[in-house]
Image (tube, rainbow, N blue to C red; front, side, top):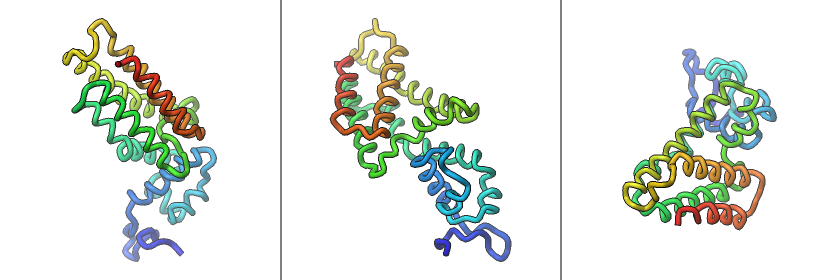
Length: 203
């Protein structure tokens, strides 16, 4: 029996489910299992939709995966917006930012890591569309770090002799590494040690 709000169509032929909620369920499955391990039957069972409704609404499995990845970035990476309007000193902000990231990762009982990083590892090497999307998403985060560092230079918290692009690359690499290791089950101490060591550069 399908959950309320997830039946396929009304008698008038209109969709009687909320696509956003269905997409959230599909996102959770892809996030946990990855693309290859998630079959169409898994998606049918997960979302409560029939195959026809799934294809009519989202297209094939690949289109649904891309839609889920985009929804993840829109829904779960809102903290990246903080990079544009920091309210603390550079060291204090970075420490809070990375600690919040680690806490979010550890709060997930399934230890799924970061869907974006998972997609970068699993799908980007073999899928041009996914590659283009994840590169753009990571560039947006890196751009946020770059702007943060420029503001810190103006405020006298970060030396003008430092190249902000170089350090933005470093921060991005640290963030991705922490998210990838969280997926692999590393404990809090390892993740926090990585963050602390990276942030020593800015103290």
